[in-house]
Image (cartoon, rainbow, N blue to C red):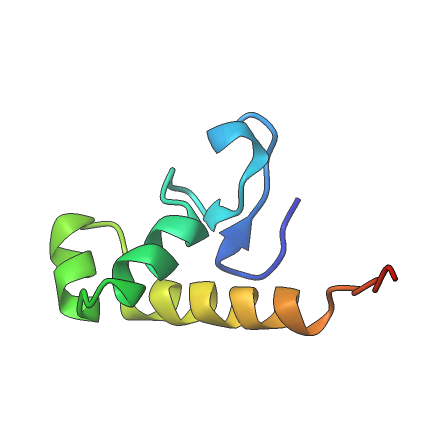
Length: 75
């Protein structure tokens, strides 16, 4: 399944977690590394297939996912 030009979900890749298209780099990993203080250049050095556009797509994917999540409040 294609989510964007750069993010895909495939049950045969990383157990269906969203990854950068054509890689096994999960969106979650990118977000976690950024939250820990990694710079975009650090990520691209550690993962040579990763581009700046991929990193931005991962952030957009996460923001879009949160924007569209349904919240059910139980009392």
